[in-house]
Length: 418
Image (cartoon, rainbow, N blue to C red; front, side, top):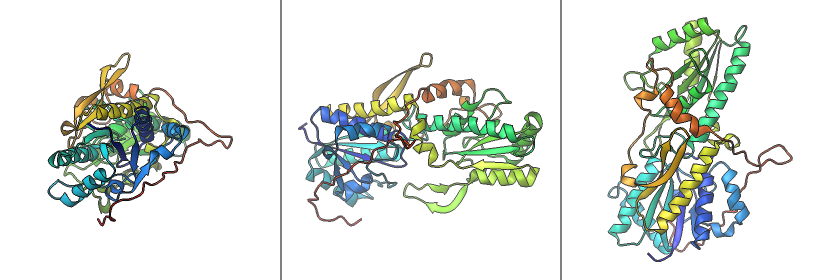
């Protein structure tokens, strides 16, 4: 393959360490004398020829990305349909790639992004365009197939476990005369990985969280309320971690916000904690507090896991190496080689084995009563939140994050009309 330009794009909800992956991609490519462009706002920027020249950024700025949360180049929730249904957009994308001599396309995202990268690789082959497509893993939901874990999850899991433990201490202090029940809402549409991470906050049935509600188990209100009441009677208070994606036995989301669906076909969720809090108050007459951390779970770079940071950078470096070797339609995935001591490595996996496959919590990770994690889950989760990687702080007491210049590349094609 002739040396050309590398195009990097971020997709979907960002994480505390996705920019660390971007930093690793750019630094690795620079070391190989490969020019890196970034698409502004993910695939939308690629389609609109709205591209950023990362060579305009200093090496200090690129390095600082490793401790900066958010998405440095912008992201988007846009899913391309099949090659047949979205033919015009795929051909436009190929036109943009040709115009800028892009020979390597790295798409940093979750399941749908892996699917898009796979489709782009097939389109390029159809048009005999020399292009290597690499899917780069990222998601706080930890639901990508094949990879042992997903960069972004470890930091969100650490934030969840720490937040639940700290909040539980607050509740315990006030339980005698005030709050009896506290409900913490964790992200997770179909997979309860983040809710499970909350289980790391305590050990034993009397340590918080006392109850965890997983999307993998049907929500039974009578059973839930009975367990809350029993816990308050036994312990004096009850801390609940609930996944946003819990469903009733008939498949209805408890927290369906009624906001329609996005381009991924996802129903807008939100408010499961407030709903549960209301039911506890009305049915049991107990004082309840609840919280919806929402974006805080994925943006809390100040509490990032060192393990997660290392893995986010590792997949970025390997993605470039795989691309330059012409390893088309693959994703660098994390392979766990040992629990004790924790060991891992990066290997390539075919995108077709990742795209459109969802990894849910194994049955063996959920306690038999359905409301807690097992020792097996703890062995899996604990290494992922280990280690601290704090950002540098300024004299104002705030983290010193970087804002890139994001200088646009001159457009050469007619304006794109979606």
